[in-house]
Length: 56
Image (tube, rainbow, N blue to C red; front, top):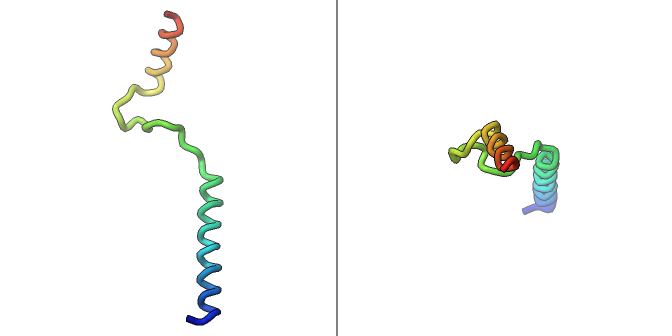
């Protein structure tokens, strides 16, 4: 392999990694949890349940 090919390959790899990290840093963070796919109660119902627990 030539030195020029290795240099270009390394620069390309670094550019891809830096782009991926930058996009990941500015991406919207998802709320932790299942996202509703597990069959748990929707947010409104959970709020009602937590209000009832506070009243108890």
